[in-house]
Length: 138
Image (tube, rainbow, N blue to C red):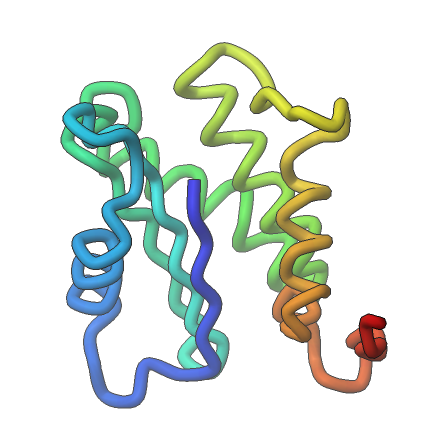
């Protein structure tokens, strides 16, 4: 599962951007088309879950819409962006595998996503005033 967080759509449609990213990034395993991409546009407050053909029977458009509406959006409305992303990861992996995603470090994958986003200076889509400071690596 990949996540892409953008400040704005800049005139594009959510569907077009998500489809282009999925095609460009080749989300999922080669030959299986089993990837999931969550795209978030902060300014427009738009979300989309793009699903590879291999997972469409499991994560239908209705299921993806339900994850956005019932899992992510309530947390985003409370400005709990990291919690919304965590819950999205958990919901997707619960749907496709019956439980939380496997983790090589024995921590839930959502914590790894949050750590990655913080390392990249993105602060899990939190407002700039709430971001963790970036540190120089030696």
